[in-house]
Length: 308
Image (cartoon, rainbow, N blue to C red; front, side):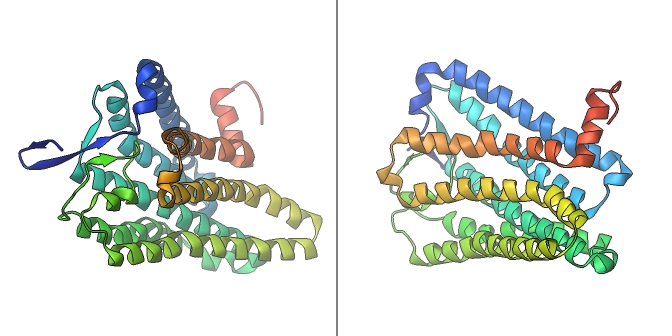
């Protein structure tokens, strides 16, 4: 532990595997960061600029992609600095903040995907009621709740952990998460139970809701005509792909946290890099290629001489 001005520092030992080729990894991660910002911001700007994209589905997509920008901006600068550093340390308060940002934005992503599935359900299964249900006010409420609810829930364990005494000062990983509990002198049963409740509220319930709505959409589409099935496949498939991808990464992350000692450092590192590199790049690519209106706008932006 290093203490300067009464600040507690934690050593991050997840960078051990990167030390040998640190400059190569720095270039790769810096390039990934720039691509994440550019890809996500481009689609968000297109949605903001073009009025025909001011529909609920695209507003939710913009909010989802903004999550990736916020997450990357909150995590990449510190990681890039650490890759080039001889000793990787982080203050305990900064570690808690990193944990808070990571989990809050991760939770909001599940809630936004649930809101998007509800939007598709109303659009396909209740088209006549769609304008009265998916109003601007309701959309704003859904987006705000998706951002504030996870932040409010995860603020509680962060606040309770702030003044907790530490007995360990070596963190296994490159990004702070709930395994910070294992640094405490006494692991609180209350915090563990509360964390489980948060996991159910922010992860399992939204996923179950999404699965329920898509099953309903599948049933209605099967009973309807070809046009309804085409619309359902065109608009729902990208959301479903993103949900499956993010759910798998989150599940692996949770398993790694619970079975931390059974996995080598390189496995934890690879899974963390999947979350911080692959997923933020995956979302804009999927929505840019699979959502017809966004694809058309991207085509006109980058290939002005090409129609479509």
